[in-house]
Each structure stands twice: as structure tokens, then as C-alpha cells.
Image (cartoon, rainbow, N blue to C red; front, side, top):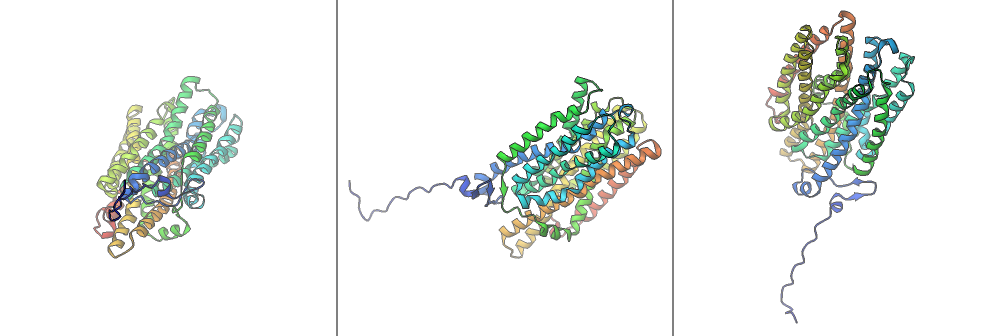
Length: 463
């Protein structure tokens, strides 16, 4: 059959670009093109790629938190008559990992830009083997306090995993989904605190209270290896994730960097400080087997963190943060009251509610970070700025602030343990520490209202 030369040719169907073409993938799992705010890009390839990286990021951060806080469990396996350590000695053993964990968070944040998100996740997971193996070698009756302080300090590398993980995931998600994504990532990681405590409780329940504490290490060392291998096989690096030292210098000039970091001391600093100290607080209060309930607070606080992020997505991070600090002030007073009631169930219940509020606040404060830079980007766009560049800058600076706030907030965990240690040394109770917490949370509530809730300036709308 012939065709008329004047007949219009039938258009050939266009071929849909493959995922790899859209992402512009390179070897070793590098992604050169990432446009999360582009709805078509997000629907076709962005969402599933981000979700896969989120899952393995959560696993890595989870195991990092477990190794970071593992000494909160190990000290409960170390009776004074066998190891010779006092209550104040044990507070020191859990303070050193908290201190190093806060210090390494800054370099961990910027390691993402140097090595890539997937590559650094593998390295940071592998580093967890160092304190774990050393503890396996030295932890036995007769070991000196100075030796253990060095080993426990090295466990602080697990605290750095949070900062790099959060900075990495912040780059993967669009603004409208950051609260939920960061909440899930952080909550899944935070629950590593409760998980290691639950494992400790199960060990005692099955093998007895006199069990060698190193049994816990035999469980976690293989898990570290598995998580590192999974991250190597399934995660990606984003070429654009350049949260470099230049970004650190830029965010350091913003007053909001230091205000957000101060608020994060009140939320995450409280969460991780309570996570380290709660078992010893219970033990000093006369609870015979604190390991059976010590995990409850961290478990609830971790599970509820994504709720804080989702509430912040819906209502605004500053409003959720304000009312959360008000609630933390009230509940801290309840903890103080129940500590005098000599009722373990009431005390544990009040403390668990306080843990839950730290989780909500963790999610809402972290939602405020990208919202700050998004609000500034909106203002710049109204003045004629280029959309893609503003979006990139907002993600870059938010990732830098995630690292700064994470480091300073984690140092709050050190302050919490110092407060408890000094309170028990001075008075034999935790009363002075609880009074300090009440005053601090009230200050955080007032600061949140004055800076973020009361103002109506354009650059703070939606924070």
C-alpha cells in the first residue's frame, strides 16, 4: 500500500526517561540531579529514592544511638561490690560518651559534603566497632575507672551518626515533607536508646542479674557490621549536598542559629541526658531492678518524635514548641512531686510523660530549622531571586544548622547528667536537678514566644 506524500506523518510516542536518566546517576551510587520541589520529578523518581535512603539512614542512626548509650545499660550490670564504682563514678562513665557525642556532631555533619551521604554512613557505622570491641576487651572486674572513662568516651562516636544522618535526609525531602521525614529519621534513631535498654532487660530476665555485661556487646557488634553493609549496598550520595564550612560560617552569623540550638538543649539535650541517667536515678532512688523499666521513657519519647514533626507541619513548629515547653515545665514539677511521694509507679509515669514531651519537642524544633530558611527564600523570591538557587541554598544552610543545633543540643545531655550527679552528691536526691529543669524549660517557653510566636515579620511566617 502506498501513502500520499502530503499526508502528515504520525508522531512517534515519546519515550519516558528512565529513573537513572532523570537522576543522572554516576558510578558508586552518586546522583547528580536532585529536584525534590519539582512535583513531577518527585512523583516519578524522587519519593521512592528518598524513602529508600530514609529507611537505611534510620537503621544506621538507630545502631549509632544504641552504641552511644550502651553504657547506660552496662553500668547497671556492674554492682559496686564487684566493680568498686560508686553512683558518682557511674554518672561519669555515662557523661563521657555524651560529651564526645556532642563534640563530633559538627564534623560528622560536614563529612556528608566531603564523602557523600551513603559513603559517610558506611564509615560512621564502621567506626562504632572501635568502642564496642575495646569494651569487649577491657570490661571485667578489676578494670580501673580511668581505663573505662577512655573507652566510654569513644562510644561517643555513636552520637555523631545523628547529625550526619539528619543533614543527609534533609537534602532528600521537599519542604512540605521535611517535618515528617526528619521526625521519622530522628525517632527511628532515638529509639536505639530504648532498644539497647530493652535488650539489656531481656538478658537479665533470661540469664540473671549476675550476667557478664559483655553479652550485650556480643549482640551489637554483628549488628553494626550488618548495618554498615546494608548502607553500602542501598544508599545514595547527592552531588549537590554541599553543606560545607562556608555554610557553617554563614549560619553562625544568624542569631536564629544560637536560639534554635538553645531550644534544642531543652528538648534533645533532655531526651539524651535522661536516657543516659534514668537507670541510675531509679537505682539511687532504691528501685531494685531499674533495668526492667528504664527503657520505657526513651521508648515513648522516640516513638512520639515523628508526631512532633507532623504537628509542626500542620500547626507550625514554633507554636508546637512553645506549648510543649509549657507542658515540660508543668510535668517537671510533677516529677519533683512524685519523687517525694515514694511511689515508683507514679514517679516512672511522670518521668515517662516528660520523656514523651522531649520527643515532641525534638520533632517540632527540628521542623523550625528548614522552615526558617524556607521563609527567607520565599521573601527573596518575591524580590526576584532565582527559584532553584534559593531552594538549593535553603537546603544547604538548613543542613548546616542541623549539625550546629545537634551538637549544641547533645551537649545538653552532659549538663543533665552533671546536674543529677551534683544533686545526688550534695543532697542525696535529685531535687536540685528537677528545680533546675523547671526553670530552664520555663525560660525556653518564654524565648520561643518572644522570638517566634509573637513576631509577624515576613521572614518568620510559617516557622
